[in-house]
Image (cartoon, rainbow, N blue to C red; front, side):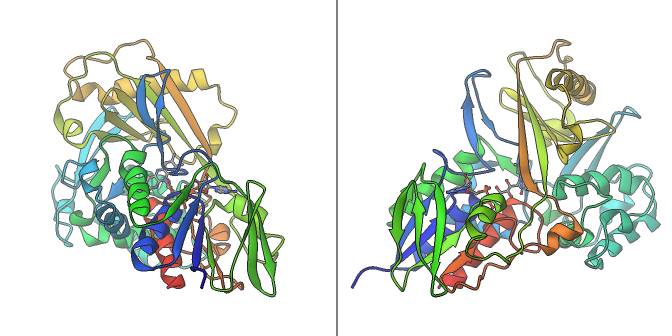
Length: 429
Ligand SMILES: Cc1cc2nc3c(=O)[nH]c(=O)nc-3n(C[C@H](O)[C@H](O)[C@H](O)COP(=O)(O)OP(=O)(O)OC[C@H]3O[C@@H](n4cnc5c(N)ncnc54)[C@H](O)[C@@H]3O)c2cc1C
């Protein structure tokens, strides 16, 4: 009898996590197809010849409370590729007020940090905590802005947290999505909020070890293999086309579609015309500046290796080996801006923000830089778009969906992508 095949199409973190999970749990032949030459999708690193540095397509931060992420990293034996201060420390700088502070959470669930002036947001007032209550109790029709309480706690912590988590402005961002992240991070206390990021690069942490494990477990990996059609006959997917090659399915075979939502729309609309899918997106802008001058850090940024910025274009500045990188979320608002001008303005923000943490100031000239604009970095995490996220099950019994845009209950995050991959894999078993 022919061996059962499970075809996973899309080699981002959703597809990779489904393949990692299934290749260890089933005798079926696992085949993973990726349309581009490299795997990782929206979370990948590459060597940039202009900067002569390994850089990420975008800075990615994960938190210790991201259970699926850490489970995945354990499975692929990649925990040692992460770096962290090991404590829930978040330095911030307010450009308007030229002021620095550290948010330093207490480990347990009780928020002792809110009672210490040195550990909380300056200007915090107790009634502002109601915002957290509103967020975790939010319903499907409320925006983040509906839940916030005016004051410094919102301006200096919840708003920047919301925009980077949702990649969508607070005015239209879904409160229920932010509430689910608050429940899994802030409400669990500092032990769930320790920030981590890759020591070298995203591919080195999340992608390459996963591909090695999938191969070791007998899975087949196909790069540069683009899906152009899924065909449905008598309710089941009976074949699909990759690079003009027809791949026929036997009655036992199954497919996990783990591509991005716009590709999903193209291939699903002929066979599942009524399926709702997110169709509005937000971009993320990353600027990587080459550091080829002495950079000696001190204070909390030396420990954390990143800092949140209030009152500027920049939102987070990451200090990495040989590179200073800036993230700007919900960046559609900067469409049409002159890249050179942006790079100059952002470099001035970096100089001002990092000055208190450096033994000698950064140079005035703008160093060599790479601007990366991920135009469809995430679905827009609005109330309407959240309602358009499909389940992993479809009306075709042998077709399952995975991706950060499926109904994970989370915004577009690595945690959401990996959970969706696991969920589709579990649905198959
Ligand atoms: C700049 C940026 C910063 C981010 N920062 C963070 C962060 O700090 N923390 C966090 O948790 N998350 C962050 N995210 C979100 C995170 O990267 C995504 O949620 C996650 O990578 C999505 O994985 P995915 O597998 O669902 O989708 P994708 O990564 O989009 O994977 C889909 C894959 O399908 C492939 N594909 C598409 N069409 C076809 C086809 N026709 N045939 C075959 N293959 C195809 C694509 O090439 C891609 O590899 C960030 C994202 C970006 C872009």
